[in-house]
Image 1 (tube, rainbow over the protein chains, first blue to last red):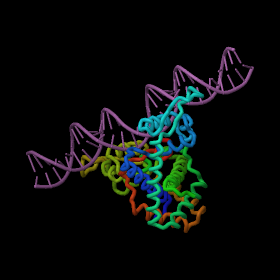
Image 2 (image 1 turned 90 degrees about the vertical axis):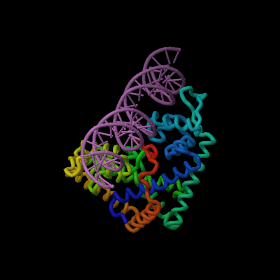
Image 3 (image 1 turned 90 degrees about the horizontal axis):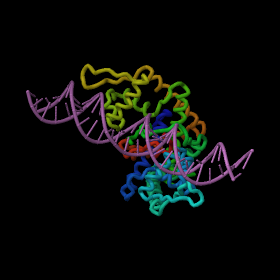
Image 4 (image 1 turned 30 degrees about the vertical axis):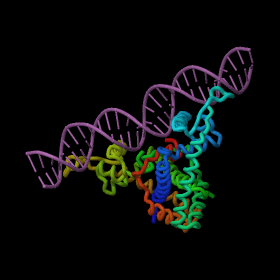
Length: 159
Length: 159
DNA sequence: TCACATTAGACAACAAGGTTGTCGTTGTCC
DNA sequence: GGACAACGACAACCTTGTTGTCTAATGTGA
């Protein structure tokens, strides 16, 4: 049982990686290779209204150039489409394709399965309370997505 | 309250980032700029016996070349020293310097403070149970540090 | 209406932290 | 002694970020 604060941090990271790695693996098994959480986040942001690169960058707290790179990947794989905005010739309007929606749907299903596994392991009430407590803690000191950055190395994993 | 598996994953990530960001900020405030969790992990591994680059790579589930790069940074900042091994001329023996130990000590103090904050927020018993449950879950499906990599972008933050 | 500031997106250069592959040197084992 | 393993160094490259600069399009205020 961890006692130090550092152990607690590591535990949270391990929990996240455990879920995320399993999800990525399963998604790859289902034919969606190289899907990464960031792609998921980006697509959701696009759906939520960030329909151009600059806006997407702002939503993800990332430079517009970085957002453009992510979009390029997503577009290459057919998950998002892009066409010029009739209202503003500077903009390229983004939209998630049916294939993109399919990936999102499957990703959600995979995560839900993983959560059910956890529920079976520690019990429904316990998992719910764990989530509730974490929500309290995180809510009290909200994640600063614009905080100093973390890289794969920081997070204990190879890239 | 989160219900989906994806929300759970995000919650864990948010928890980690919340702690880690706060710790890095505080450490920077105390004069240790550019300290990253990876540096901390690496130093601990060195202390735990990974006293050469190849071994450090293995412990961190990272290539020996990547480990060497991390060591170079740590050495440059005076946190670790290196000298040739009298027993084996191929090896360069690593050792954490007093300055390195000082950073580790302060890092620990910072994390412990953060943990205490959390304890005050949700209660000692609750935090302990959260940790215990997470340990169970993570232990049951151990974090694969050699799994497909996660980058800062994946983790929702800029680099 | 015209000048000026702002914005979108493209492109280039670079940083950090990884990867693989190669190589020379050193150790170990039969 | 010779084959093989392992250490560290070096180089090339990938990914995901970052700035900075540029052009084209748009908005705005005198």
